[in-house]
Image 1 (tube, one colour):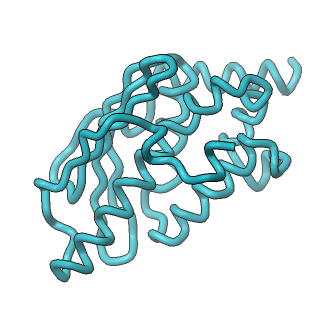
Image 2 (image 1 turned 90 degrees about the vertical axis):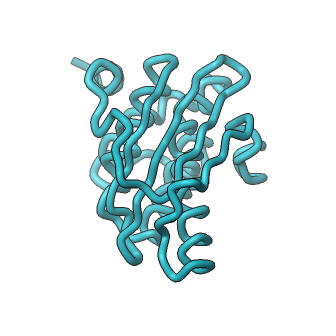
Length: 172
């Protein structure tokens, strides 16, 4: 079996049985992101414990790449530090946009998505969960700074799109 076939199977496994799926309580922030290009959607909740991402839960609807991307993201950032989660987001972005080669030893399951970069429209599918996580963690950190803790369950973002939550690197 080739590496491409193994990676395709890994993506399909995550899509069929997404890890950490289902919205859980308690949470600090909930966000909703939509990829307007294809209609993929994710509602994501994050809970922080100090400087750690204690829990990520989500409901995702869309293509297998989008669902699998959210599943891998949840595995990668749950229990990570906030800085570690944001650094991981940047590293995934670099791999998916071709600025870094995927290394299975360094990138784990994210390496399976490296082939997606050949299809620019699908990169947004793979990044949807990651963009939602970045948005939710940023909001939770801001709420913690404002309140002394990140426990405001009413902080939601029902704004439109993955595009609205992307930085300039993602738009290129």
